[in-house]
Amino acid sequence: MRDFSEDTSALALNTATLGHNLDGYGAGWPLERVIDTCASHGFGGIVFWRREIGTNAIEIGNRVRAAGMHVTGLCRTPYLVGSGRPDAWFDETRGSIDMAAALGTTVLTVVTGGTEPETKGTIETKKVLAERLARVSDYAAAGGVRLALEPLNPMYGGNRTCLMTVRDALNVCEMVGHDALGIAVDVYHVWWDSNLKESCKAAGSRIIGYHLCDWLENTSDMLLDRGMMGDGVADLKAIRDAVESAGYAGACEVEIFSSDRWWKARPDRVLRTIADRFKTVC
Image (tube, rainbow, N blue to C red; front, side, top):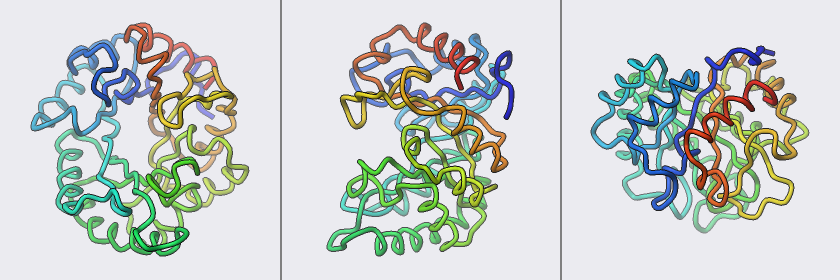
């Protein structure tokens, strides 16, 4: 595995870690301050959410590069399946791809959405998902963007996702058969999977994203109680070994939703803690 003990160039911040993905949380820093402070703490990359970008994608991407970092990803497409899928999913997805390209990132995260109405299990939903991904894959490739399917913890099955393991995500990639499709591996969602290493090996170069946090032993909220790396029970070294043994050598994106702890802390303290934990426990 890569040695991060003295090197944070692979470290990336997902801005939701500072609480910027929900109104009323976080310090409310403008993106320019977030970018500059990340750079000052040695981060090599940053990942934004679409709601933060608006029509300023080119300017924000340039600001990140001027600070010596990279835009390593964008969150996320709309849901593509399930009852939460917007009617305008196709146009909105293409708009998400355009935004990622304008930012200068090659990775756009896909959280699929839940099971299709009037279906049981996930098999039929995965078929629909594959059909819809096929409709946008050429467009993504033309913009130099890859779509990173993110399997979610099974507790989100039904309403947020139809993919609950790396193997699930790989199966859909293989159904579509397009190079624009990849997989994002998030510690929060896969830490429990005893077949993770084998699935990552099978996925190989399809793995285009790796997300860091921790699973708290007594987590109190399905969405908003993720742990800082080292505070939970996930085997972070083993998970990274599974990902890197499969060939992944990209950014390590810290994504922590923590409304009662880290979103209440000063952002500079959060960023300093992330850098320290990245070098010592990840």
